[in-house]
Length: 456
RNA sequence: GUGAUUGUAGCUCAGUUGGUUAGAGCGCUGGUUUGUGGAUCCAGAGGUCGCCGGUUCGAGCCCGGUCUUUCACCCCA
Image 1 (cartoon, rainbow, N blue to C red):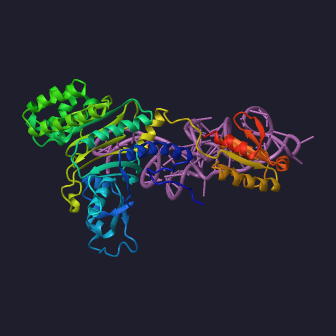
Image 2: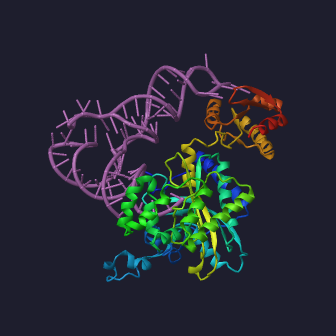
Image 3: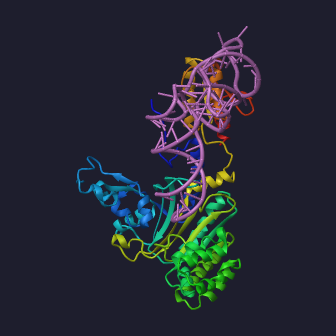
């Protein structure tokens, strides 16, 4: 006998969890489709050459690699062994589990360039795997819900992303959240404006901790990272920013007046907000955060990140614009913008905020109970009749005490039990018991159907 | 990858300075004259104390390793 267990960082989803996950996924899917995105799927595993080198050194380490089939050591010589795993990896493993949905999508676009018509809008909801250390809101297997549009530089896409996020959150009843928005060009501009050109990477890593550790500590870290005292002082106007999107844009326009790329970033953001205004989208929940930085390696324009306030979970959604999605796969000049919802984290958030609807699971509406073989056979006729009408019905599959059958229905929180006994066989009716009220009545087939259809 | 932390019945947890047959609540199974569930009562089943090794006359308890849980850092959804 073996004690069952799960690999680190993975989970089972029971019926209740699946119902709740589907509740979230449906809200996301409906929105994606409403906005004209088409669903695709890609394989769980990709060639390792597709995956490596796309996520930086740390990302490569987090890739789950798949050992070659057959004798995976056959290409290894005794001289290879001391060289370590990094050098020998290509001989042992040619495939890996997907790490995100963006790179497989890029591969897909490059491979199907001739069949796709651009701009191409796709969504994709699939699990991804990371060999990370699990902790709160972090799993080794989790789902991403990506929506990307490639082949256009229109900033309408950015505006629509904000719109979609607002729509999904509204559907899920999430009210206290912030969509943080920034533009990579603004970050570049800020680094330029303080005289530390090209160092926006370390700048953001440090500034990002402002809320957590305070300005003094951030200053220390910036000094450590080789920033000039004078440059750091120039940042001060950005530390205690006025709130309000328009106010901040005005400040940044001022701050970046020496940086053409920075001004470009501000201009792009302004256009996104103009679109939103024309679309009649409110700007509450939208925060312009000039220090927001994410995945600097490939974002080139807009950057998004969504956080729900008052919960202990990290960001639940994020994304941005990239100039050249498919360049590494031999298809240059395909710009795009996309974002992703983290369902697993949204689940944790909704659970923490108690926002899941209390509705009964969409399970069986009526259980047909009986006392003996004759009742069971009578139940078979009702089963076909009810199911033909679209009533979710089940027949207790073996002869047993009524008590047991009622307990079964009770535990599954079914609304009705239909009892098939001798009296019912004689009258051709069904004794329908409402399990919530305990009331029961003898009904004909049309009466019963009407009753069951009344309930979800 | 670094540093902590957790593991005892299906679940939530007790278990004294190392000392006989490891406990509770909930849940589960069965019963209370067989056509009626949730409540009460009665009875019962269920544990190689995560796993491997060590110390000891003796280990759930001490030591080492390993796996797992949770958390912080890094990074990220």
